[in-house]
Image 1: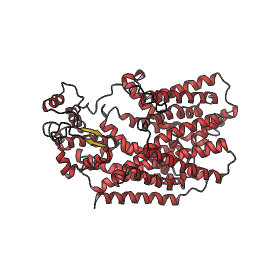
Image 2: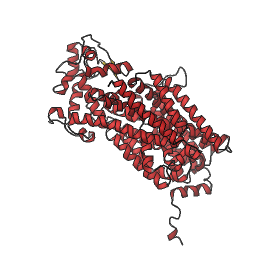
Image 3: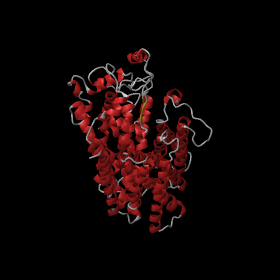
Image 4: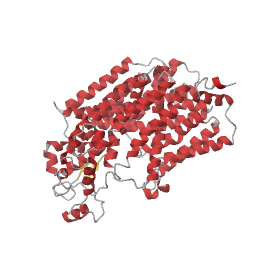
Length: 608
């Protein structure tokens, strides 16, 4: 069966499942639309939370970032530690208490806890900016995946994805989204792990990728470890050792911390814990989510490492048995004629892979053309008249999607990966769109503009807001702003510097008042946004330029990706200082904070 037909069958079946669930789980009340009626089982909620979090970035990009990072794979492990660690914070410090509060949205908690409409509106602004930034990438990821696997244009793929999300998100609300995300998690985890099992068995002789990563390299007879073989291959081509240490531990620490607290402050993830029946279920579902996330995140380093070795040994076939440059590289004629290299032509057509024969010798030289002059590869390049690295572009996003093709796996595995990538992108897009819809209908309309709105009208407004959010996100996906690919840091930075500190202080510090909370959020927001824009581009001021985005220009070597942790610290400090010089919160607010943290009746037996 042709690959296109297989892709169509696998993707079509999964879409039919999503639509069927949407019909079955249609939301009929605001409680079902916002929080699935608070009746989701912790295990199901754990799966849905994992799917909500593991977006196209986790499924498609993370392993690619680890694989192709010029600084090596070790430094990029911050993504794994930060994103997973954020769930530990969420499970231990936030989820149970927010569920006990009993509301629908994060801005509602912030507004009620700090007895301020202004605080609630500020949280709405941050939530919408964070969510819109994310959803652009998800919708664009849907279009790219469709364009590759279903042979349609990126724009057409985006329209199809938007239509599917519309069906199960607008009509199903949180109820429909939750059970759709359960199905999407099952699909994406199977799609991610099956290719990894095949590839690990081929390269290491171990069926478990986690063990294969630390095992031996099978094609060599097991006389060298897999990572040692990978280090040997990439260093011979002039690249940095794959397992090399970081050169800036402070920045790596702050980056990991920013990802952790940014994860714990992401509104579309937090609202998942409002859907379970009891407070204890919120902690339980967070634990299950960690288990389900770990199934992918412990495999990702192996996927990235094995993809890097597969790519390298494809470009230099002699690297499989000998030194990387002892034999000829692949030729343009090989790419055009050999079936096992057809994946190169396929991905070149998407624009995510680009090869250029710069010196016209018919061979494709893949090496680090910035290696030191005394490196053997640099000397060889000078002797042979190479004109530079001829693998001009290898986008991070191709590594997971193309890995089964590079490894020569069966067509049904490639089709499964396509379905999994779409499941990952659609599940997160739906969660983000619901967060935007809830912020507009529940926090903006009902919370500020029309408090007396009926439940029927609020449900209608929520669906209209969801439809509007889908239209806007689709338009942005079709016409992504120039900064979209550069400011993923903005979403995490804002969540870390605004939402997370507000939630932490709202739960654990009863003397923090509305003046302190608003001042802290504003300082965290402005400081973080300004620092990111200085290096990523002042896109909202025509004619202005950013500073060079290099470590030499960063303040104390702290990159824009890491600044969210400093913004959070500034938020905490300002909030505590302002609160200490202004009046304490009303007693009923302090009592509410106590009731959130301390179980009802605690200590009663010891009181006299």
